[in-house]
Amino acid sequence: MHCYNPYVSIRFEIEAQSGSARSGRLITPHGDVETPVFMPVGTLASVKGVSQDILEELDVQILLGNTYHLYLRPGVEQVRKLGGLHRFMAWPRAILTDSGGFQVFSLGDLRKVTEEGVTFRSHLDGSSHFFTPESAMEAQIGLGADIIMAFDECTEYPADRERTRASMELTLRWAERSKKHFDEHKDEVPWRSHVGTATQALFGIVQGGMELDLRKESAERTIAIGFPGYAIGGLSVGEPRALTREVVESTLEHLPADKPRYLMGVGTPEEIVQYANLGIDMMDCVLPTRAARHGLLFTSEGKISIKQARHAGDEAPLDPNCACRVCRRYSRAYLRHLYAANEVLAQVLNTVHNLSFYLDTMRAVRHSIALGKETGFPCVQSRPKP
Image (cartoon, rainbow, N blue to C red; front, side, top):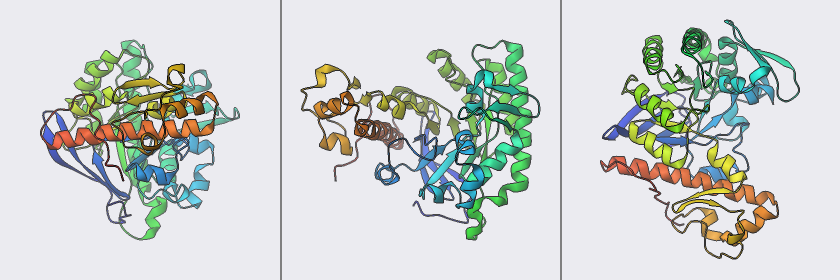
């Protein structure tokens, strides 16, 4: 299922539906991905603190890598020379890379946007760099992910209507340039030399801020450019959660039913269930890994702050309904001790559990859809104990 297939570019198959929710399969050159899927974020070609063999044990089918960070270090050319991201990080399964647009947006005063592209200063050493739709495509082709993203501008929140429209129009022009450059250079992906006909898949990104009519227009014009999948971008930038959901629901109405729909950078366990029920197929978020590093753990009984003293003498597992390697072996008391002692192992174990919780949640969602049911929360369906 996860073997390299040099003849498959990308294909999306819907296998079951329940209301607006659908479960299916995203077939990529590096294996099948069951949807709806949560994609762990591996910013620097690494999910912080978790080795690839454990990610495989958790049955992670697709990882997300960050173009901006990998461009700065170790550099795209270095990764290309080493055979692309899959070979570089010893990950045989699917990878998606973002375009770097959101990270550049996050730099604030360290960036300057023009029609041609974005000038920005590295957060590492202050050196100046320039990203264009073309160079973002070149970088992502060099990195060699299975799915890559068009270069977009993420609109800040709040933003007035005039600013939002200008940003949306710029993203649409950049989408056309991204697709043109990709179509001209897609045969240069590092793993293409393995023999075969597979190429990467370039997804378009819908912007439009919080203006529902602009979201509709952005969706329709992005679809007209023509992509094999569509992402909803520009959310989780400070807006209220209720507004996020309103924008997602409204935008989904205008996206093709037969193409994968990717909601970027969202959300909590409850939210990923809600969005899967609405018909989202792909989601990513740094929350499970970032929260783990700060001692915040997700369980079927609610969130737990493992740093609290009340866990110091608790011999119970973190989550009695979880079959992950952490809950099978360690007590809350031990996890609390590791965190209080600032042991590196605390971050590792916390991250493994949170990722397992998110992945089990999505597994349960897919199971419910297959049964024709809408999923509530909590809905964790643990993997059987070995």
